[in-house]
Image (cartoon, rainbow, N blue to C red; front, top):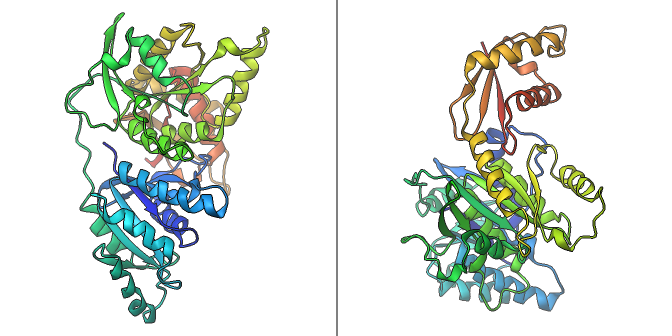
Amino acid sequence: MANIIAIVGRPNVGKSTLYNRLTESRKAIVDDFSGVTRDRHYGQAEWIGKKFTVVDTGGYVHGSEDVFESAIREQVRIAIDEATVILFMVDVTTGITDLDDDIADVLRRSKKPVFVVVNKVDHPLLQQEASIFYSFGLGEIYPLSSITGSGTGELLDDVAEHLIVEEEVEDERPKYAIVGRPNVGKSSLINVLIGKDRNIVTPIAGTTRDSIRIPYSQFGHDFVLIDTAGLRRKAKVKENIEFYSVMRTIKALEDSDVVILMLDATEGVEAQDVNIFHLAEKNRKGVVILVNKWDLIEKNHKTTKVFEDLIREKIAPFTDVPIIFTSVTQKQRIFRAVEAAAKVYENKVKKIPTSRLNDVLLPIIEQYPPPATKGKYIKIKYITQLTGKSPMFAFFCNLPQYIKEPYARFLENKVREHFDFEGVPIQLYFRQK
């Protein structure tokens, strides 16, 4: 189960600044992958060896003032349902407002750990002012400045006590998560695959209600499906459905090996789809894109090609992924999707022998060496695949710091071209020989 930290509070208290501070500090170390769009609403972070996803609820509220307040309350409820820890953010310069009181009221009734984060405490004189927030009755308060970052360490130390360290799951079978925006056909796909209505299927005992795991073993395939679909039967979540499905998707995605991202052919590729795609990529998951409801599209011989190009353009730079056009209701090409996921999983776990890597890539590198920088020539001497949950390659060379992004991408394309890593993000590291 994924650790999710949700930042809640009224507008303009500094939620996104804190969000940026928590997620960006990690970016420098881990995201050595340029060109990945940074989504403002959810990102990953790590503190003392515990990984977690931070969700900035501020990015999900739209609408006029009156709608606004009810939307914020609604989100606080969703956060209580879905998050591991809640950071309730307030602003020392404005003191306690009615909306703050309302939010505190909802949070007091929850069973989740809540941390009152008092923002904009930029100098010692304001420390005293912050004590008014003890009146919420939510326990300890954490004065900090999300702009300078002072106070965030103490907050994270205490938050970390509530986070779980991911247990390695014993089940060795590949895990495929079916994700996508609401109403794209996730439930129907699962029903078709299992060949019966899902309500009869008993999920594996001991699973939480975060995502249902369904073992699938037929037609020579043996894997576990992680379903995020049939769990959304909540009355009041209409306007915040996007936020809600994001929380669910993050959990399922972190749990899986391969992500089957379903798109709706009638709606095209939406921002939310691209966000999920990049989240899968950043988490080094295999990806298969499934375009559902293809039977509803007026087709000529060019249609699929046009649609496919459009998708690849939106998800660039990582475009080496299988795209399959299906109609779940017509049962068209459903099993192609399963086969594609199985193939992507194989690509994700495969190991290329060092001798073969060097035999294939060194001649290419010799023919197209990295461009010289500052009159220095870069020599790549040796390549090997590192052990990891997804494909990583080390290129040993004399001046790793001079290898630029375009050349790294050229090498990645060559690795893909010769060794088939379709559907899988790969990482290249340049190291001193």
